[in-house]
Every structure is written in structure tokens, then in C-alpha cells.
Length: 382
Image 1 (cartoon, rainbow, N blue to C red):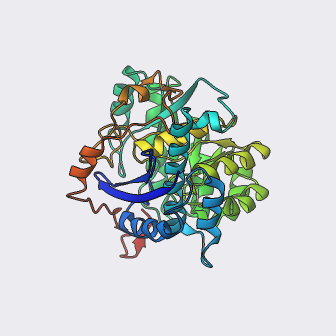
Image 2: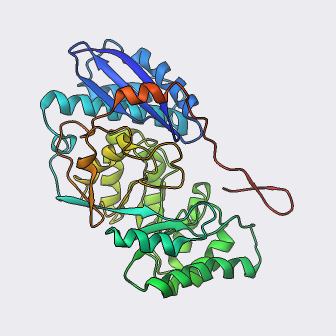
């Protein structure tokens, strides 16, 4: 079997799909995308095609190493996202060729179903409690929301109080009938993170995500030493080489690699094992589309330390399409009491509606994240 063609499709709300075709008619799907930089990643995918056309798609490890090491410049968000989507598609082909889900090729399942959580609110959430109540009635009990709006490096106590009051109101209204993680989204500086973590501790969140920017990872350990709240991070780390010093330094309780950004299944399988060796949990980042979610689930079902799976059904970014709109087998992704059962179909377990993608690609979205500024006019972290 040989790879014959790579085709990319842009689709609302902000997704990029990749189809890899072979000379034996087996095709694989991936999501090589970086939110807000889909066209840039697309260009990288087609540059990497030179190393793929005519090659045997079954040689996943060699192809991965070739894409990664075959260029003097490597790593980073764009290249690793391109490799990630290609890697997903190669695993999809291999599973379909052998007639088994990818998790069988990775050693078999360690669990029968995977716990997921739902996003609530938006960038500036105002109706979180109402959304939680509505979703709780549908069987969901675990959520994540943004903890703050923009914060200065040293900000006013009133802004800290506002962030804490929101969490206090949620806990007061819903008690411990729900669990939630709080995403600092890299908006919080190290000095303010210490203050916020201390104030939030009585409300017992499941975790705080990206307590500081990943560039400031050396603060994870001292922040963890100052709080009982588990700290999570990893969506903006792109290889095991970036995770290595973070795990060695300690401080994180949960790693959140993104299987569409951090080299795909091949790389994130290794990252999950590194985390397990450090007694760190795994909760893959995935505010993306159905192929990305399917890839995450394949890893979740073989990683003993996987505890939670993010999924983007109904997320506030999804304007123009939702998670399952391009999927022909949505029943396999049904959430029952927040859990998704092991995907039964071969490969990644997702059947893509290519006809709908072709239509969507006629009007490719140009999603960009918001640009925020502080009151003094300086750029703020979104």
C-alpha cells in the first residue's frame, strides 16, 4: 500500500480536516489545525506531503520521525500540528486496514468508557449557573469555565474579588452536585496566580488550568507548593521534549497535551506514559472537531492515567457548525451520564461526511481569537 494524495478541507467553525488516500482505496482522516492559524498549518501539511507520497502508510513510526527529524528546523506549534493531523490519519488507515480500533493497536483498552466534561460560559461568562443547570438535567456533572477576564501583572483586589465571587456563587447555587475546573487561560501572572489560588481553594475546584503562561512553567512547582488545588497545563506544549523539564520540575497534577498540536497519537502516547511515570494524570485538550476528539479517545482508552476528556459539543466557539455536524456515525459519540463508550469502528472510529466538508470548504472560515487590551491600552492576554 502506498500514499497517493493528501487533501485538506476548511470547515466552520475553525477546523481543518485532512484526508490521506492510498492506492488500495483505504483513506484516513486527521485534524491538523492550530486555532486561528489553519491556513498556515495547511501549508505545512502540504510541504510535508513530499516526504509521504509513495510511502507505505503502515510505517507510522518511521514517517513520524522523518517528518520530525527530516528538517533542520523542527518543533513548534505549526509544524507539530501539521505532523499531528497526518499522524492521526495514518493511524486511521492502519486501523481500517487491520479492521480494529486504534486502541487495539496500542495494546487494548484499560477502561470501557471515558469521562468527559463540558465547557460553560464563554470568554466573558455571565450565565454559567443557568448553563450548568441545563446541562446537569441532560446528565452532565463536570464542567470547565474561564476563571477571569484580562488581568494586569499586578491587579486590583476588586478584580480578584470579582473572579472569586463568581466561583463562590456557582458553588453556593449547585453545591457539590457538580464538579468544575477553572481555566486561567494564561491570563494570570505568577504574582496574581498565587493570590487567586489561595482565594479559590475553599471552593475545591477539580483543577486550575494554565495557572500561568507555559513560558513561565518554572512557576508551576512553587504555585503547587502554595495550594491544594491540582494544577493542569500542556495545551501549548508541543512535544515530549517540552514536557520533559516540566515533569522533572514537578508541580503539575494533570497534563493536557492536544492531539492536534502535540504530534498526534504517536507523540501523545509517549507523553501519557511519561506522565504516568511521574504519577501525573492525563486530560487531553480538545476544543476542536470530531477527528481530534476521536484521536483523543483512542489514547484515553489505553492510558491508565487518563481521567477527563474535553469535548467541544456546544462550546461557545462553535458558530456555524457543532462537533457532530460532519459525522456520519454520531451515535458512537453519545454521552451517557458524561461518559463516551469505547468507539467500536475500526481506525479512529469516526466516519466523516466528505460531501458536507466539500461544501463547507467553499467558504473557508477565517477564525481569529479576540484581541484584548488593558485599560492603559497595552495588549492583554486572551
